[in-house]
Image (cartoon, rainbow, N blue to C red; front, side, top):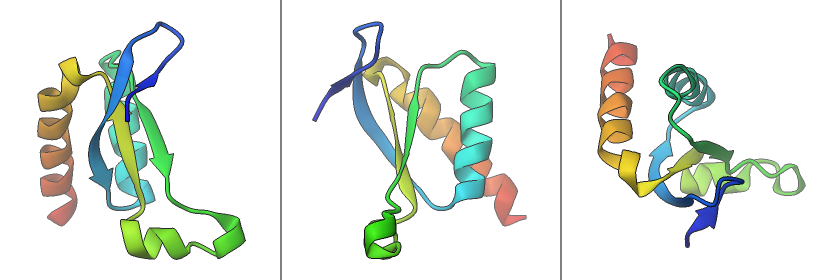
Length: 83
């Protein structure tokens, strides 16, 4: 499902995010590069995080134009955090 930001740019789901640290680091990198994005957590207090156990921590949405760049950044972030 496509979502729109205030600039009327279509956002698509780019990738899942594994944890809050990855989300924070990825968000910082994308903000630094002025890449529009939205990070969404699957945590729901009503269900005590049940959906995070099923779906993963969260996901990132951004314009399709930036998909390949964001996926490459995610790969780099994951490589760096594995060390």
